[in-house]
Image (cartoon, rainbow, N blue to C red; front, top):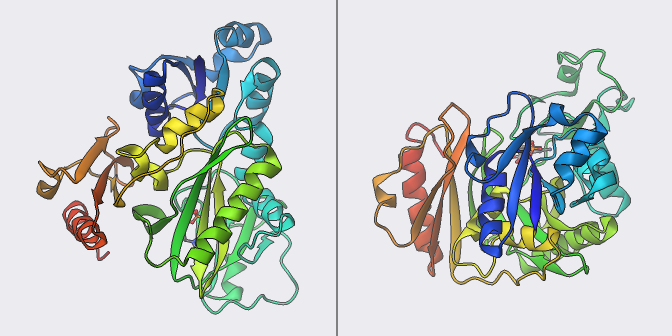
Amino acid sequence: MHIAVYGCGQLAQMMIQAAQPLGHTASFIREDGEDTVCVKDLGNIVLRSELTSDDALKAFLADVDVMTVEKEQVNLEFLRRCAQFVTVHPNPNAVEICGDRWKEKSTLRSLDIPVTDFFDYANPPVEPTHSPLGYIAKSCRDGYDGKHQHRVKTWDELAQLPLQGVALGDWIVEAMVPFDFEFSVVGCRDQAGNIAMYSAIENEHVDGILRRSVTPSNRLPVGLRLEAETYLSRLLDHWGYVGVLTMECFAVNGSMMVNELAPRVHNSGHWSMFNTAASQFENHIRGVTGMILTEPTYQGVRGMLNLVGSDDIPAVAKDNPDISVVLYGKSVRPGRKVGHINVQNDDPGVVKKLLDQLEAAVYPSADG
Ligand code: AMP
């Protein structure tokens, strides 16, 4: 099949690298100014603004069997226009909801899935909500990796934020959650409704950006994992979703709440790239192209460290059969994800030690 991917980043790269051995080919749709280095050898790249007329769009989509997305910050009008001419997975409604924190949290709540307390910045409750750890204001759209957020300690400080005059639905405020740890679940649904669930992942973030992951997590009780998987399945079925959907969660004192959703393959699922029956990328492609999913079995313990702002490979990563380095080919800039390092071993202690060593080498001045 020929797959059109909306987006040209590393997720598009890894999806299509998984698609090619299955016999699929790809084209990519880019925005003005979008860096396309990740996908430069993987298919032709078209500019979205060149597809404004129906004739141009139809001509481009004539060879396309299915379209998918690698990010939630997409032009929804364009995605919906494409859906008139070609199958789009996941469906644009799910992409819209996951790309808007207000709609996302409201949907989760309506499906009885626990979320952080939240309210609209432009319509705060009369009485302050109780939150000993303070508050976090988040832009409803275009926020990712901790961008477009403000953290404050007190209720009164909320009024001082440079957000005066924002409209209803533009910014939400959440109570800061005293979470014990963060975890995510990555699941893939195929066109027949079968779901392949990846092993839940414990995640550590620094400055709002994922730093490292491990699965299985020895801190995540089985009951909580099953609860999270039930919620993710509920969402997948509710939307008739096809492809990978990721749910990021907080574990709080034996219970859980969802922080956010990503309608796509996810950084916390990168551990599945090697020596897993099917990676998140492969199963996503299988799902959207109408193939049967592969149960994502694997052995041992898996870890992943992101390379953010540096592509220097630590000495410990070299010639170690337990370690695989993936570089996306991007130029290095502060705060930019340019690759990741996967670690695997049967012994959780070895995986932790390797991740600690790698992290200390990649982030020498960091405390975590
Ligand atoms: P987000 O952009 O919502 O994924 O937030 C990025 C990171 O900020 C999360 O992974 C958490 O580490 C932290 N964070 C976000 N929202 C909250 C919250 N309500 N309480 C505590 N930490 C949060």
